Image (cartoon, rainbow, N blue to C red; front, side):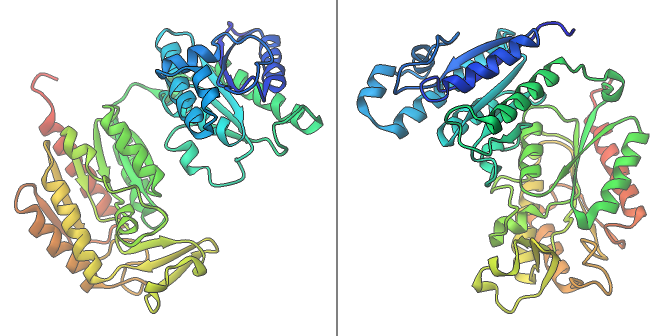
Length: 412
């Protein structure tokens, strides 16, 4: 039997009381403590919570009675969401939270997921939601939240919901009971690599070379969420250096693709002064969904059907000039050792001689704009190689390691 753990259980006890109580009993049956936080406002709670709704509201500078009297559902949800985040963070800081489980419909999902996103990576998080079959990107964000679809509405226990909630309780209990294998997560400096399907050979080779040199490589899929997650980890000081091999989220930001990481991509490492090597990996493409989702303004452009759910559009010379300026300006602003590395024989697996997106003129437009924007502030290195050539990966890793050594204080 594992040592008892404290699992925070979030729910609205006026509308989801029976379901929360059912999970609470299952958790306690496993020998753990279920610490219940009531985020309801309207009706009477089904049972007394460890953290009552009044305390949750106060944590947000609000009052439950006033929220109920106002009758504004949106205002109430916003207040209880803020209060839940504050309460959960306080419990975590006091070492009274080993894991968290939340359940609900739209409002419960919003409150529970916000509290989970506020917690650090690695804290066990399980969310049972009626919304799980839809777009969960805004709900999960960049955090490690396990989401379980409730299938039926969470409005009274039934045979299906009994099974779903039992699975959720088993999942969170298993998570808090599981010890991390220390040998599998050695305390080695962590280096980020960004990757995409069209740059996978380069990313795999870079990862291998870095780990051979005694570093831990964290590979982030450059699909919007991955880029944001990496930028957040850089900002939190969790990484030693960045090999930004795949900056393809920037074309999506420029052209309205589905995998943008937002307007601040490529800023965190420069701002923090982390050693970084930046490469225009997959800068030749914008990601859309099925063909019918491509905006009409792009009619007549060069497309490639990557899979049934992804349509790729080749960037033009004009777009690449803008992207080159963006990259050059952001890398040039770096407060620490940085370099821009350009593979002159192509930016992705599709952008090579004979490839569907091979366009040396468009790539040249990127290079010229990036070099102009850097304005000599950081080195720009051009290699007569394709991004997926093994020699390019070796050059990128060697360059990054030189920058890391340059940033290393004497005596370390």
